Length: 393
Ligand SMILES: Nc1nc2c(ncn2[C@@H]2O[C@H](COP(=O)(O)OP(=O)(O)OP(=O)(O)O)[C@@H](O)[C@H]2O)c(=O)[nH]1
Ligand SMILES: [Mg+2]
Image (cartoon, protein in one colour):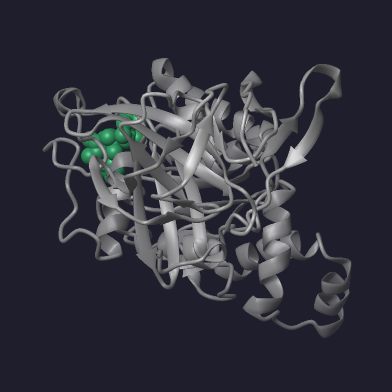
């Protein structure tokens, strides 16, 4: 049994231009959470995510890698994606598995092609979005200009949730914390801006905030923060240096305290039935429902062979589950069920709603398949993918 429940899961895809530092950032987060004893380097070929010999040779990611971090009672599934524009398809195909797209920007390079594409596609797919500005250790950055460029390109809903301080050696929270100084000016002003933006989604809270004229408690802000993320009314911006570790603890805290669980993100859209009779269908992240799981990545592992990585949308997948894939006439038995940590497969006995797991040695499985155990035909709406499922009750 996993030691967490659906409400404690947080699924985040790290997307963005090549060289923005996504793989290095995963190392820093794993190290901060105590999952690894020292962070690896892309240049040394010893990172958890760039595990393929070609990735080590070229020193950049060639495919999506999945890791999990257990922190403060939360189970965070992170997907490190390749940023080269040529590999954008591999990156986009992971968005269906998460509630949040975290777009990483290289502070020195600013907004790039993949930054724009990812923010656009995440918005189209109604994902919660956040922007992570990495490499704040680089000297003589113009971060105020970068924030202005971000707002011009992606809207005034992009607001700092923390700010760099002490010349980028640390960051200071401006969401829960209302005071202090930062490299980019007063924390109070940034705090007021983000709180104003959040309370705008809740009229009653807005009245209370204006009447009361004092700080709202973090518990009062949680629900409106989730609504603002879901509605695209807020795209928080945070600052880190994956190299020095500045802002990494704070980023982990944002993931655990604020980013949506599978119960809080916008539900993924499915269609049930065929042709003009098809109706929209929402998977319920309920363990008591029949299984619906979507395969968003297939890999060939030298030891276990074909590996299908999937997101459980409802029901519980166990080693004993008999699942149908596509039009297959026979179900397959799950057998071995894994959680992934880069190239490592860690055996688990259950995949609960919202979680990301993998199964090995199932020939019938294919990219974009939906595995389920009920008689119905379902299509996944996103990206024109069509799935048909023949299942027995
Ligand atoms: N100065 C500085 N360099 C960094 C930082 N983070 C990453 N780098 C460097 O930037 C380069 C690219 O880092 P990666 O982690 O491979 O970037 P990526 O976004 O995963 O790149 P792709 O896999 O190609 O998409 C490497 O040389 C890193 O050492 C940072 O915070 N500061
Ligand atoms: Mg990478």
